[in-house]
Length: 124
Length: 217
Image (cartoon, rainbow over all chains, first blue to last red; front, side, top):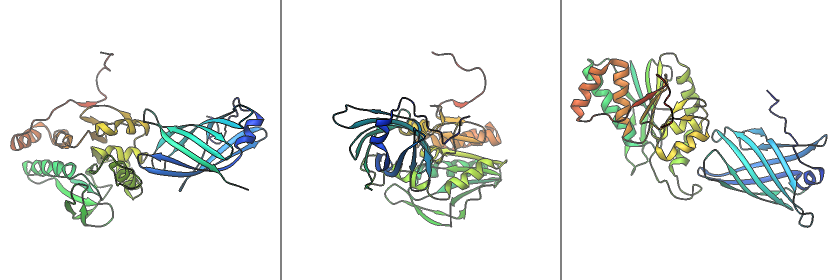
């Protein structure tokens, strides 16, 4: 068993980590309503780590991978897995794109239809 | 022996009434040894179903460790609509997960002489609460993909017997579930007597992990 808090940097690179670092307020449109959470990405010893904080629980992000997009637009493509228990038990797979301080993309649980995800990076 | 059928805000009436009538008739056929009750999660009183405001009264509060069976019905209500504005079935089931239901049902599943049964979205409510990981179960056909996403092994049968957890599919399968519970607990003669009275014959095979696994057909 690996430690649950370990997030692999995978093929991430330093410049891409800088593009996504910080805390993001995200909203996810699901069949049980809009769920809100705060995601925090940081580099620990050059390794990208992430954590999601919902209304009642805090969970580490797994298999976190980030790739810088075209140098010109400063975008980054980000994927990770997340196990949640509240408001319901789900294994979620996220796939989002970050441009500046905005995040858009989707999450998916098993064979369920995608849920759209949008987020904004907190300033400061 | 107690049969406790749970009422909650937004329950599906048929999911409650079908087992109530079947188990009550079974109790009569047994000379009254089965005490069939409608119960609430917190306090006795009237609860409003999800269908046109129909109400039923819970006479007792759920005792999660009482020997016997506990039946969790599903919800009724709209399926379409913006879940931020409309109280859809998934929203009702998610709200149920915010009550004492998960803790009480976890205790029921841990209790040695208590059988947990679900009908329709009741199975999904347990799955959403994280109580069915690795268990074999079924819910309403429209909820089976969600149930699978909660880590449950979904078996698309009308009734699924997973030991101390017996689950059934959509609404009318509550009849099949409760007749099966009578047969499992008290024998086929009791179940058959109730089938005759109700002029209803069960359909579908009750799935249970017994015998050889089927090869792909």
